[in-house]
Amino acid sequence: MPSPEFDLVVFDWDGTLMDSTPTITRCIQAACRDLGLPVPTDELASHVIGLGLRDALQMAVPSLDPAHYPRLSERYRFHYLVGDKETVLFAGIRELLEELRSRGRFLAVATGKSRVGLNRALESAGLMRMFDATRCADETFSKPHPAMLQELTRELGQDLRRTVMIGDTTHDLQMAQSAGAAGVGVAYGGAHPREQLVALAPAYCAGSVAELRDWLLERV
Image (cartoon, rainbow, N blue to C red; front, side, top):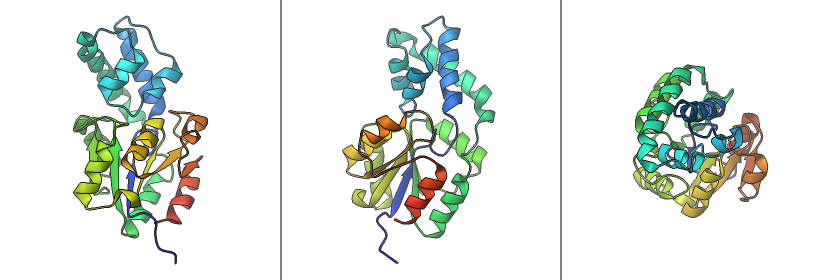
């Protein structure tokens, strides 16, 4: 058996582990509609996924007065909580996580969700004890800043050069590049198109969970 390349595998949440991109896109649009704001297109609303909520809304509705961000955030959270029951893990993700865990690899999450939102999602998915560490956008700098990966590796005593960040957006891949970690794009999540992910020259770009599994299990 060749020596593993990675000791720490870090996953984005929405659009990577959880099939939530359509729900998030609809919720951003519904929140804007509630407040009579310009409704972003599907492409724009999905492009901001992965960022912290404030950064995401600022990009999705650039004309909005910052004083109104709290109201828009409240409407987004309202719609997300209503639609949250519609979201499920991508098929094959649970099995992949269990196999990585059985090999003794460290697992982590780096997400644009809030701590409350991630904990709720982990509990709902039955994954609360699956990860060794997690980092959320309301605890540190938002993606693509490298802080999440830097903090996770310090917490777990790991080397960024032996860490891989897996995500469905350019924000994830830019964060990996800035941190000095490997980056893997997943094109099955739908937030950012494959060509945008490939343009950042990730170590790999998976078109399905099965492709991600095959690539990853050869390297851990």
